Image (cartoon, rainbow, N blue to C red; front, side, top):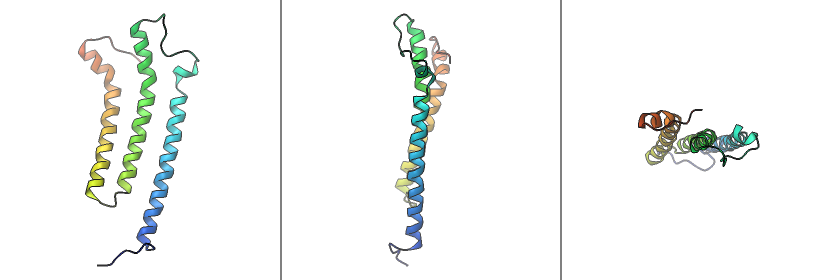
Length: 129
């Protein structure tokens, strides 16, 4: 069996993948930050919770503001799962951890997007977007 040295082609290839994954993670973090800062609720300059609004109106505004932030976090978790998968080097435990992170991001995204339907099914007033 051949032993891989630190200067072998395999090691150099993995370093290139790690650098690419770090650049992708940094780009995703910057993109997510820009998305969450540019949220329409904060662009108007008003506060998130208003004293003269009803509870339902305040909850609707919180929901509408939190969806882009939560989806941005889910995107970052998906990027992190991809990074874990790329750097796992075929290790079954690391691949399993990456899959778990990916599944958690998908399930979280689905729950937050389906929240109005879940609330309507339970019989409470739904926040509409």
